[in-house]
Amino acid sequence: MKESHKDCIIEVQELMAAINETIAKYGLEKEVVVALAVGFLDLDDPSVTPDAKEITVGMNLLSSVTVEDEDELDDVLSYVADAYKIEKESDPSNINYWINRMNNNGDVN
Image (cartoon, rainbow, N blue to C red; front, top):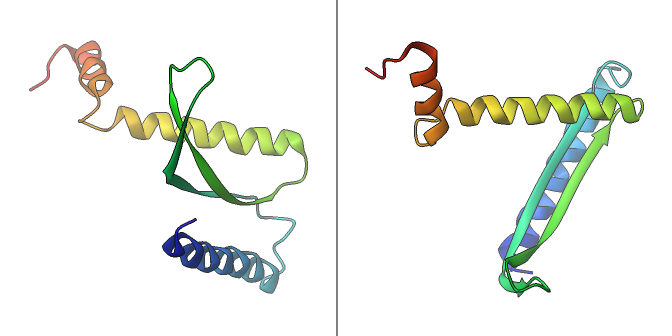
């Protein structure tokens, strides 16, 4: 692992702890849902899948999840997936942005 990754991971861990401490400071643990994941890709050590069709890299993943149960976790993850799709659909560098514009009113101007 790169030294810059180690330093950043330590700082991100501190920020995650600070988020949880802030929530606790205001007594909102029962009213707040947290789902945070930060991945650090290890681009210096790629490997090839057994079928030799893809190159993969390792990832060090930090996560903090505070939910009541698995159903609540499913709801949060579903929301994140939907927000991602909306963001991608709003990105003019994505071909789907232009396809959707054409389908909605037939005018790209």
